[in-house]
Image 1 (cartoon, rainbow, N blue to C red):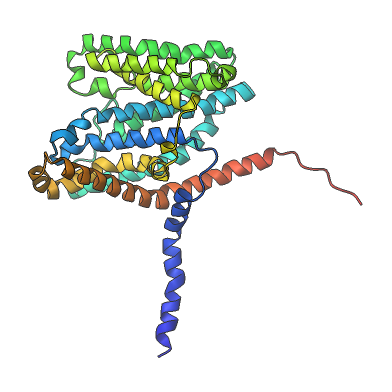
Image 2: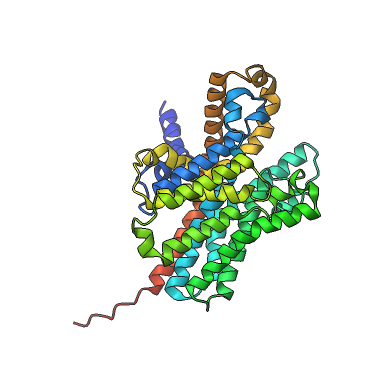
Length: 393
């Protein structure tokens, strides 16, 4: 009779151990917000991933008004580029301002602990799915070496992650090589880059007229990094033009002009300036929230913070989920394709499923490596603190 309570009690520590990563992740996501977090950037990141998720509605057979709203949902990737450009470059510009140089190896390791674990876990997942479906895993080599923006690849959406990985390598190396230049001269790097991109697109179209149809124009680093360039420029302004950044000068009209330019380009949609327009549109959106004192109760909404924190996992898993779910749901979804309320329910469900999977991968893969990174950075800070002299009685 006493054996059952003992056996049940023995399961408690096992259950606690199994659920520990998930409880810890939930406390982190739903607990007190990190003071370093900027709510406006959380809002923009959540908006970006929701646009991307919505853009896949036709893959499930959805049509009608709901699907039409996300016709340009793929542009959420460009918003991600602006955010990445700003956040990554701000770290690097701040280091240049403080030390006059950039520690490339430290930056890459710090960034790698954030990006690589889940990225390579996604590659393993796709490899296993390829094995089960008898597809060749050869295209995964492009994903493995982060060159899927130029070569046939297998990880869905992996081209944009390759673009960002190349950006993480190129920018710190460039800033290290040019570290002797004054800050104003360094600003010329992203400005020249931003101006050069439309010319490269035009040249690419002249050499390869089919570049707009085979995806090359949309995927390649040298033709689709306008958002990253704008983000780097915004980061430079926040670090080296602090007086202007903190002042009220142009905090409304400059973003308004940028957003208008983006909308005008969207209206005419020229291939040469398409990504330039999107970069200006989203750059203006990010800038107005960072500099202007806007009513931002919505940006403090906790669910947006959670979606933002899980956006990387959601971006990696959403197209894999499409491949897994669609064969079993396509006929049913197609039967309700034009029903707006059905679309709302489907979209909410897809966001929930994608974020649920992202939560699991965050708890099991991302969070442990982020913890390792935090311990390393904390240890680095402690080692730099001056040691107090011994106190003699």
